Image (tube, rainbow, N blue to C red; front, side, top):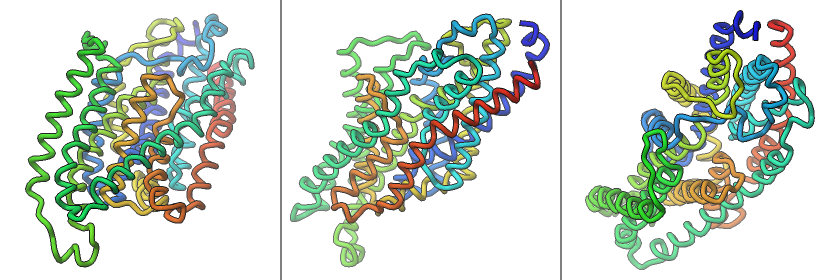
Length: 421
């Protein structure tokens, strides 16, 4: 307790710096995953992706992310064992932030789309092993994370594959694909609006003191989906066939229909990502602030002050603007060739998978879902449409995330213990 009383402002200061570094990494890597398909399909520019992310990531975190975040990340460690030494948890959270941020920076420099969630979890496991004990780690949770390396891309890829098959049969294989695209596009946009509404309402707007029944949730989601669909139809109905472009590429005019649809899907992916990952990424910062302000009380959950949310949003935008293009290039161009129709299917599938996972408790990662969805739309054209070398590098980066962040976190924990202990 004395350590916290003496060094409390230092702890909050370091947590703020490391938290900003961490959210910069989230923007450079995780958010770039969400935006990569839209940019790779040339539906939006990098500048537009930054603007969309700045708005909808924040809205997702604020409206659907909640104002409460798990201090002990998803129950990975048991805080009871360090209740008498709350400063250990502070050292651990600082070490977790720093190690995760460094790994995200390295991965972003290489263009590897890795998971922020898994980076944080690996870091917390590392500090727990170093500062508490092997028994303090919930190894069942770790097993679920390992399973997500297979479950996430498989689920996202399967849904994306089916979406791509539906686009081919309903639109691309028709005698007049352009007219078919204009006919079916409101349906696909409705699905997108409906799914994003479910993400928001299923999670509940508890911090706004708004709760809905299952029936109300579906009703409001249908209404919102219809509203978004109508807006999309008003935009798409103005699109005309471009005969010159169609001579060079038979489906050029069809892709023009999907381009504005991808703007909707980019906004949706940013919102979905914000609701699921942004608040969690700044959870360790909230934990440190909570422990210091409470004088050493260790809780499973801690409040998420608005200034932390704003700091997280600012770091994310800067990260996406500076290094985001590296990961966007991997997602958008290097796994498989994307067009607006393929990119839209990938993003709609990813959003649908997030909803399914949030309701069933499947151990998934939004990063892995996004990569799997891109692989799924590529696979719809045959295995030859995928760059297996790039996919292999991505899988390796997923596997090494947990051990690398764990080792770094353990080292940083001992350094902080030596400095302040």
